[in-house]
Image 1 (cartoon, one colour):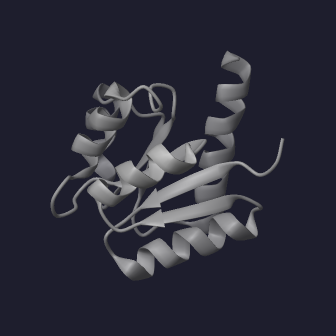
Image 2 (cartoon, helix red, strand yellow):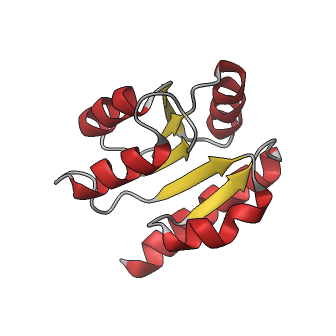
Amino acid sequence: MGKKRILIVEDEGTSRALLAAELQRAGYQVFQSKSGEEAFQVAKAVRPDLIISDIVMPGMDGNQLIKRVRQSEFGKNIPFIVLTAHANMQDYFELMDVEDFITKPFDPQDLVARVEKVFAKAKEDG
């Protein structure tokens, strides 16, 4: 089937590069965006298997991106993992339509484990 495609949406360049490097090392095909607007266009073009998105970004924030992708024809079933600097936000993210969340700074092994967990669940759900 080929490599799973992951879109990383993060306005901070260093974090975006670190996330991309870890996921590429784990064998994923990675696409990167620095804004919600750009991410929506990339997602529309490449149809990623997963989107990992920061929430706090200028312009279209992560919440708006999630809503816009979920309302699109192409993105209804794309799973999301959100990035946050707030570890105590889990209850908030459970209210959103996301599969998981990762706190910043992130642990590389935890990142890959969470991504694999989302893909395993998606496979189980058919």
